[in-house]
Image (cartoon, rainbow, N blue to C red; front, side):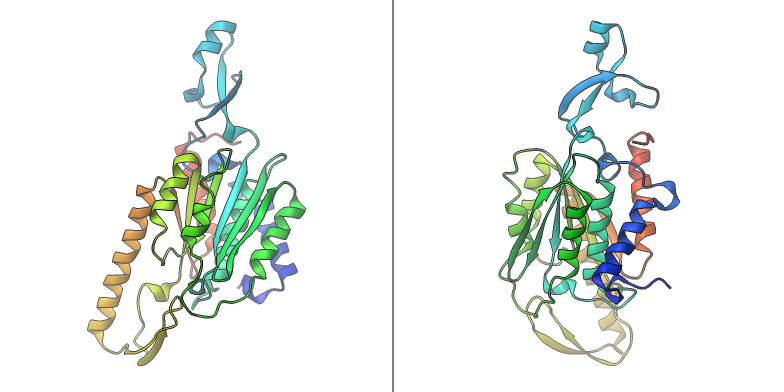
Length: 302
């Protein structure tokens, strides 16, 4: 079995992530920003002559009539792109019972977004939302900057359980005034509250991809006897008897309802949604998601 990111040194983890997404597994990850979110950008930047394989829905009929040569519209998504990664670094992300912890899977998801949007001229920035504040990494270009950003995410300290001073909503609020349209990838378990309206506000201006990080023990409890559970966001502890079938069933129903509400809130906000689990092959799930979005966009490769 391939070692998890948490079992590697930062240097090894960075190299592992780079190989995963620069070798284009299954030949499906070639492409750019439009493959990560449904549909292309809608802010027109310029036009150019049509070439075989272009999406006919982008035909610029005015330019075609004026020049008598078929033209297509280019949007800002086709040119230089600024991508922001909002990474949830709260206490609930320092948890995992399967292949890896949620914090490691979150870095993997951030790496996927970073490498898949990397292109000459594209800029990448990040905001890490944790209890000690929001750590902002200004957007810059280049592979060295990309790897430095991921290293910052990998090396972030663990969080002591307790009420957070800064929330995911705070990190989203700071993105409202960005001058140019871009891609915002929000990587979180979305277990805290208050992020719904800020996410909707950001999605009005930018294309947004919400990457939901889930661990299987958050969905159901195994019958392992008396279990001490801790709420990582408040530090509260409680002992429960997992041998009680009724309790396990209530837990599962409540967990499913919670995840359904998260999914609905993300969709109502106008964001794309990708769920990754710590007990699954997350790279394969990213590949499938990218391929699905590409088919919906018309099947063309960048």
